[in-house]
Each structure stands twice: as C-alpha cells, then as structure tokens.
Image (cartoon, helix red, strand yellow):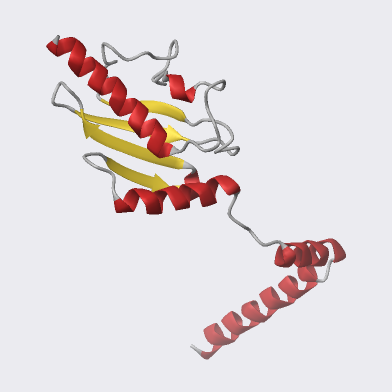
Length: 160
C-alpha cells in the first residue's frame, strides 16, 4: 500500500512539473494573459432579446413565448384555427434588431394551407419579416402580432 501511494504521489508531482513547464512557454503565457483580459459581454441582439423577454413576461395574451437570449432564439406557441398547437421558432441573426429574424414552423409538420413559405423550407414568409419592411424598432412582439393576424385572416377566410 505504501508503494502504491508513493507511486501515485510521484506521478502527481511529475504531472505538476510538466504543467509548470508547459505554462512557462512564452506563447502560452501570452495567450493565458489575453484570455484573462478577454471578457465576454452580451451582444446587442442578446440584450434586446432579454429586454423583450421581460416585456413578454408582463402580458402575452393567449400565446406562449419562451426566449433564449443567449442562443438568439424564441419559441412562439398558440392554437391554430384547426385546433392544433402551432409552434414556431424565431431565429434572430447577430445583427438583430437591425435585421429581421427567420420564422420557422416546427409544428404541425405539414405546411399550413394559407401560409406562405420560402421554397423548399419551413421558413414562413410574412410581410413584416421582409428586409425592406423590417425596422429596428420592431421586435418579436411585432412578429407574433403579424403571425396571429395571418391566422385571423385564415379564420375569416374559412368562416366567410
């Protein structure tokens, strides 16, 4: 038992010596100092999404919204005219709010009949999400409103 312990202690000391030798290499010391100085700060897009998450927490009506500011994503859920739960994901670019998010339909899996999609994808096409009509003052609340207006238009078409 004493021999095993002495071997383990010897191995630990050798490992520490190797770590000290590696850490004494000038390039690694410089990199370590740079990493110490580097402070990760949230981006403007992340801060904006955090702000919008707080605003959504106050009142969102009959929709469920969950925002992951760190990943620049938001999930929007509400009941569709068919009675199914519609789940949509807004994927914000790094330039958000200066560029519009992409809106993906996650559920139901089949394309909805009155929605417009980008060819060959599940990306929804809404007028508010067009580059030419998007303004930095718009947010996910505007996207949710536009999506629900589209659904209301579908309801009116089906009833009328």
